[in-house]
Image 1 (cartoon, rainbow, N blue to C red):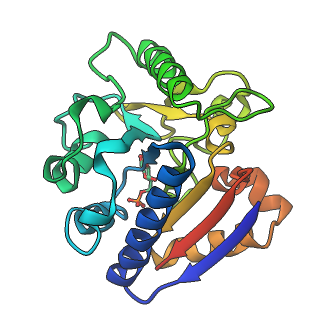
Image 2 (cartoon, helix red, strand yellow; image 1 turned 45 degrees about the vertical axis):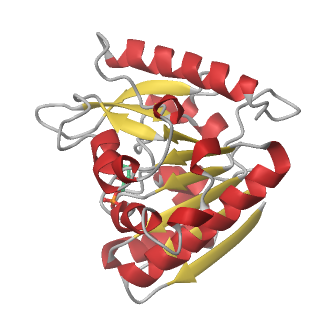
Length: 245
Ligand SMILES: O=C1O[C@H](COP(=O)(O)O)[C@@H](O)[C@H](O)[C@H]1O
């Protein structure tokens, strides 16, 4: 794994750098295996990146007809709900680019429960990624070309929250999880560590002064950070990049 951290002065500068990286990874992936697979994150930070990707100079550099979009996590809400990660990405990006509809692999939150949603999404990942042969040699895990992640003020990433039992999940690729301290409780669906850590390039986009101290502890590989902050346990086999503002 190689780790790299970059600090930016503005969200615009961060989003420009992230858009450049997105294009580079997409083009490289196409050379390697004729597809580009990306897992998107939710939250507020990546929205500007998504808006940039549907404009030049990025739009025409992305092989949309060979791109497959997945999600790293989702709230268990309808797909047009204001809290839906799919809805955000759809409004900011997907509706504006020539992406074939069958390449949009959203987390199906219309199913009867978050558990069933997680199971069905895992089956989707297994089917799609075996067709593309995006599997790691050793343990047959799916290997996304690019995984975008964010980090919450409690150190959560995707929907891996501090002290959640899902942090210890080693077998399932997708899991349902409660969100601590929320009333009424909202449930979520998340990719698990084995999948996130199999990513070829993992890019964290983190904004907010209050998160900088946590990121520093994570970058210093402190043992406390590893125990306290789920984001600290993202150690992919591929490249790990942090873009901070
Ligand atoms: O809950 C979530 O938040 C994190 C971080 O979001 P941000 O608003 O601080 O950028 C995000 O990565 C995750 O996908 C989302 O579900």
